[in-house]
Image 1 (cartoon, rainbow over the protein chains, first blue to last red):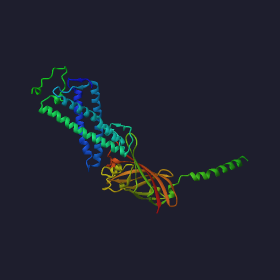
Image 2 (tube, each protein chain N blue to C red; image 1 turned 180 degrees about the vertical axis):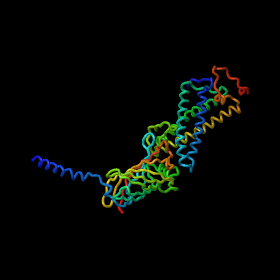
Image 3 (cartoon, one colour; image 1 turned 45 degrees about the vertical axis):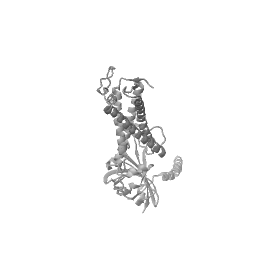
Image 4 (cartoon, helix red, strand yellow; image 1 turned 180 degrees about the horizontal axis):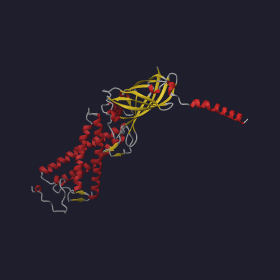
Length: 199
Length: 194
């Protein structure tokens, strides 16, 4: 286990968290929209291209998040949490982080193996080469399945993660949600005076 | 004496060169006068390049057309051609479905793409430029194609026809800039004399 810090999340980590969260939700919505039966084919083409561009953006941000974690270490769990809650939250966070990398990578694999061979033109700015994979109907089918399955898992875990954050914030009145909403103090301060703690 | 030698030499040379020249001489359009029906053995190929290399290569398998070559005045020749976008064929069935759909040809609503020549201009022994009106998706624009005569006999004639068409003119610019706006046509047209 890497070193843990208990001085809360920095501004970069907080921004990355919410940006990735917004991207994941947007990409899931886009994914549903573009697969809708009877969709206008021209619109469908555009939505797929946006999905690929935003998906690669999500992958880059998740990669940045991983680098930040490797460089700065994990933030220690909120001291109010019990041992089971700590383990559950740690496992959820690790899985969420892993899936934020896996889902877009599997999507990239779909674009790299499909026999449609449509280039990935990131936001119409730069061509992103396909991963070095062979194109075939079977490979496309397999990676589409992996992409969808990991995406649904990510969505489920994100729901669990949000529900837990809301539960701790609204019911238990603990500071876990606030840790992800405001910057840590510049100087490590004693445990912040948080009304929520005085239960 | 010297003159005679030169004459003999040039005669001999002429005998060697003349048949070769007749053999290699390009077929002349004016000798192919007549009315022709476009044969089903013709090849209507097109390609659209994509960013980063490669692109869509396809062809149309259903088409019809007629042309008349005026032997005295090539510029009085006429061409009419119809192709049926429903017959578009590529390496990918999903791509074909997309091309037939409302995004591109809208083949249900517009089952034909037509070309009517308005001017034919001979540019060489075996080459010409054809101007005409191309109608696709109910939109008509002037387009130009280059024609090269490849050969003919009493019954058949063969041309290679090339031309670039901007698909945006026909509201078919879906997928730009990933796919370029230019559609490159490369057609081997075989005509059967009527």
